[in-house]
Length: 80
Image (cartoon, rainbow, N blue to C red; front, top):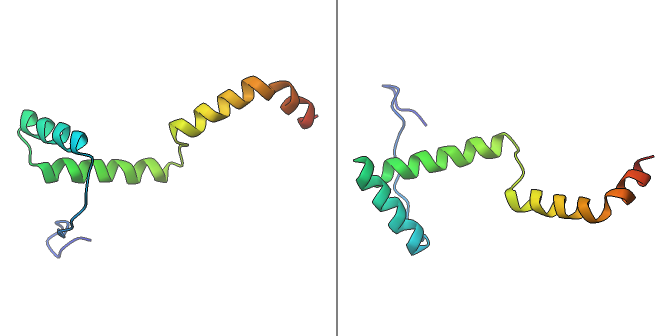
């Protein structure tokens, strides 16, 4: 949501995160000279864009490829 001056509004929220991931993000923020909240904003924005593009998750594609290797001939015959 944007404010009248065109800036996005901010809202506080609390959540829990894997401690290793949080440590890595904190290190990244420090090395880039950015605030943690800026990286969280970026990550959430990237997630939203990724989902909008309807890209299948990596584990789903891996399962599909594995299935296709095993049952590819059957799939081809069923398609005929």
